[in-house]
Image (cartoon, rainbow, N blue to C red; front, side, top):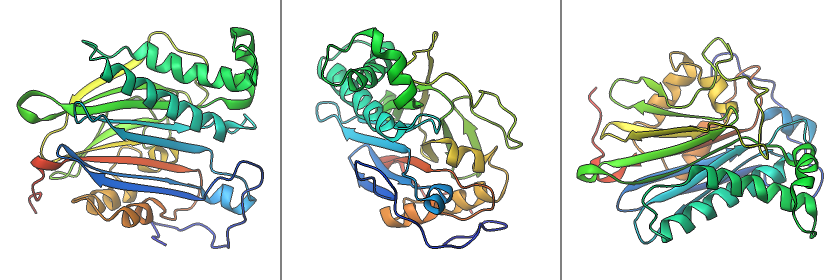
Length: 291
């Protein structure tokens, strides 16, 4: 266990209650010609202590036609009794829609359609086999409410990876400068003092905000894209503290997938929420940062 500052209480985790089965931790990692990717979703210390399931979820896939990497990260709202299911549905709905749009070679991605598909997947679940009409939206929000960040990394100008993102709720995205150790926030979340730039009570899926928060950025040779839930973002703050320094050191080069999960599973007092984090390095542009 990595301890950051004052660690949390040490205890043996309790098994999560309920169905379907939810593993404590999900880990993934691989490389394409374009990028190197690491992904982990960790059950928070609070849920481990109380024996409740991980409410975060994630999904990632490669679009074979373009070489782009499609992803989604979601944080189920704790007040919704089946938000873990909602987070899983939203991630898979968003990734599937993005892949279909890229198969169709659309001139520009329809982010409203991506978010709408994710939202509709929650409504369809609430309909339980009946025609998924909007009348079930209120039940879907009560049971499955979740945040979502979805996006794609694909080849841009001169081979530099280009990132496109959409946000619903307070999960976030950052670019870490490996050379300077600075974090640039791409989507509104919270600052290092916990001051709400985006309210933690912001309306989640299946409601679709208007306008949508959409962002595009190039991923330079010394950059790492980070997409994560507020379990990571709240601890990171503005990146100037101990957590920021930990990840700057740990992500200077892509660690092994299990090492990435171990890094994310750090112990720090009061930060006990689920943590999900996607990290993407531009593979063919990777250089050792200056010391």
